[in-house]
Amino acid sequence: MKTAVEIYKLLPRTNCGACGMPTCFGFATKVACRMASIKACSNLSDEARTALAAEFEEQQPARGTVYEQALVSLRPKIAILDFAKVAATFGADLKNPDTMELTFLGDTYRITRERIVDTNGKEPVPFISILIYNHLSMPDPPAPAGEWITFSSVPASHAKDKAWAGHV
Image (cartoon, rainbow, N blue to C red):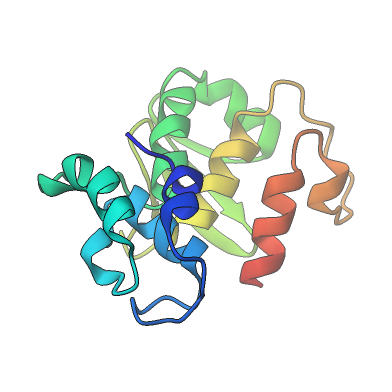
């Protein structure tokens, strides 16, 4: 399965927008995630089309967005947590051994071993779920200090810091 970078190297890299994306790299990313067809590139060379044809001929299910992929990898970490200990550590309300409620960024969320929902029973936008999952699965969280901190002050958080800045 080709990565977005491998697909990008085969594209014309003109950023013409004919495919519906503003950049060729954005288009390559969508193709790699099975969210766009390589056929949408009207400037693709015959050589590149041949190189990509076999891999993208068959309709395959989308691998999901980066957020969805992150959620898939984070859910197992939550499933194995000791909810009683986590609830005590983060000031969450333990509803039962497999469910807790947590106020996060001013909103209340119900966390189970399978998913996160808001007070209306709807799943929050993926990046909020990712933040909550990362928050709850910290191995040695610092004691609450009553102060706001930046993501960049949390170890291994550079990507989250950039993603947050891009969405806020």
